[in-house]
Image (cartoon, rainbow, N blue to C red; front, side):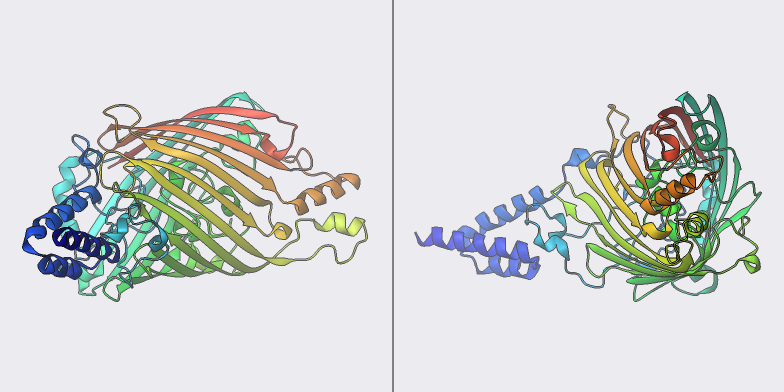
Length: 544
């Protein structure tokens, strides 16, 4: 009876120690346990540790995988949707636990602490697998230059050169049949000033881009708010558009970093690698990309951002960015020609839990931004004047709210956060008084490994709903009543539209991804004049 009581007491003490994540309590429990029950306790501890590890088969890397065993790609990895790029600094003997992200300010958990212990994987150990999507093709087209690139990286310089081409054709509905083509050439360069000049924690990041082509949305579908092809807009037909030129400083032993220089707000805020695997939503949801004078990738302005992790499962970032006309400075080089209209102040909170023994990551992002620019009333000046209603038209700043969430529901093919299937959803709201698209909601899935032995292929399906501001629709109705034209692009008072997008990304060969696309848009132009449009296309991405 005494032995049983002692064993139960030891097991209870051990369970409490696991929950509190205090290894010293484990040791004290085992040492203080009678000899005839110590083996029982140690066996139970080993079994619990084994049960907390992921299933071995879900961590198995694909044959000939270009990713290292850690799951962390070599910097810079093309296709990353955010600036959370792998560091080119190996930190020597002080290499931190995380390679692609920051160390937490506190070793405690945040909201994940409220989860049951058997669900919360972070309660036992921190997670190191990175959050990225290799949308630019795994590995490299020319592996022969890898030794040269490795030598450059050891000296502090890393680069990538990527081609992305998209062909999309309207096969039914819209305004006419036909196909458009666009392409993008991207050169990304990172300079580690710690290795180059002894400035530890400092780095400089640049990105140059060339884009050319035509947009199928305008030419074939009759849609002018939603770009149905990713590689289009803003930069125009410029030989070398400057997207990024910013410095980064990591400090507090990699617990906080700050970036400042020329960069896009939606390169880090309101985006994710999952979102950017879709054509329509990359690099951010449409309702954010349509905000007037917003710093939307690849449009860059002067700005700064600070980022830190309060706990192991949370991250906070704050920023301040110049606001200038979205079509101004199309080359990205003529900084002196930009007209500053205000400042946008974004803040974003992310909760990132890891669930179950297979460490299924989730990302739940809550964001807010205030734009101090005084924007024109969407009601329009002519309807308000004709109706002789003084005070009905007024300018105002803009407030933007967004939620973006995704949760992995199964893991397959490796440790990184893209080795599995995700469910995802989001909602965006803009001040209706001064925005064209006031609301957007989306939901979808992103699954890999649906075909046996093709664990690096990915299937994506997303539904999106776009709502035109009631204020804008009211102004259009007033204009029609007054006998005014809405312009050649608007066929009537606009309400909402819907887009369904599906793709299957194929890791065709080292350095090349081939991605067939299907898109179905309901109510192009946000009116019933064009019922729908069905489009098919192909995206090809190649990485030098």
